[in-house]
Length: 373
Image (tube, rainbow, N blue to C red; front, side, top):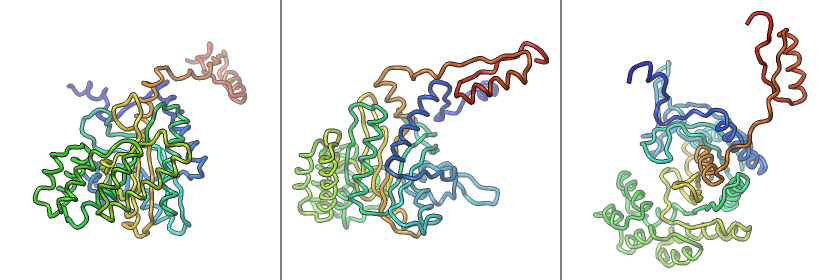
């Protein structure tokens, strides 16, 4: 590829939107923000980059674009919002009483290997609920996620719930090294029973816990899965307690009328390693991957000096736009009609254009017929 041709292209993993595409995305963003504000969340616009050690999560560090600042500091483009908001809540918002409700809308940048639905530049819309009662906050965040999807017109969506505590409870006392633990997470999420056995080879773990971890990968479906899981983890108090927390949130959502859009997947143990409790992903017909998700991260704020329980979720704007285009199969509504304005005198044309704009009319200033071009 010659230099001129390369300069005319954009790098792989980033995108450019014009006209109708941009309008569609803006409407999606405005709809989600309207829901966030309707639940009394406050907007936060965090910095585009920060010190790289803010993003030291095992699952984020390898995907972070970092660089050296002019003063020699190692900086990084934000690969997610959650870590940044945790730092801000522990610092600038330290004296603010809890619960703190914050929402954001903007881009993150992180390396993603080539794969369907993956981009390096991602536009995320989401919120964080910091402090407060965990059960109430979990249910609130899931309810808001469902309302966003309803308002956006997504049909057939499902909130698939899990709880990291079931997985970690079954591993209690095993002291798996990080690489082995990450491999086991991958095998559980892939529902690979043979891979789970291989990942646990040589690990000091009772056979009943090994069997439970194998079964965990297959525990997915409706509310009956919670009953089946209770039998599987009955002899593990930590896992049983986590399952009980999940069941409590499920029952509250069901009573609120959301039962038809819920599912359970106890093999959902999330890729981001700061999650500690309830986790979920959002799926809908028409897309072969999730459009968003979230979870509870009760230890992250402690890293920044203000231990607080916390939960959040995000929707990927790019994925929502793609999903809606596939589900609805219709173009975005056209913008308001344009009224051209032209005059031999440029000043008069501008005056007329301003007058129309004061009335909310969409105008286009055409080249006037006289004077200099």
